[in-house]
Amino acid sequence: MTVIATALIQQLWPYLLGAVVFLGGLATAYVKGKAKERTKQAAADVAARTEGQKIDDAVAGRAPDDNRERLVKWSKS
Image (cartoon, rainbow, N blue to C red; front, side):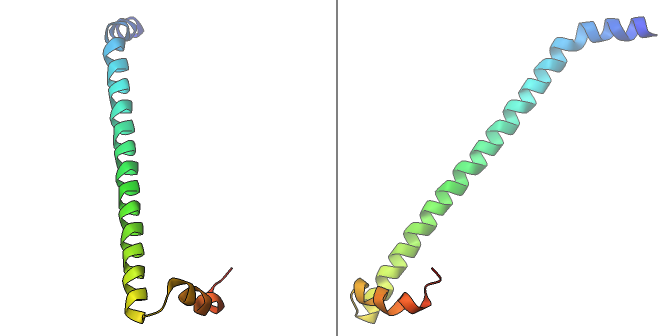
């Protein structure tokens, strides 16, 4: 029985190795794509927040420096 199993493994190991390498590459591509999308979304969020802050400042009718001075008391740092 062990002779048959050993012979089978000797014949199939290149295919098994190829399958493992393929799955590893697939997982790597998935993780990199996910990270790229997360980075893209974070950049879009920052741009939206910046634009929203500009609009809020314009609506409030105050200069950005005046707003910073008024918000110092709310700062956690």
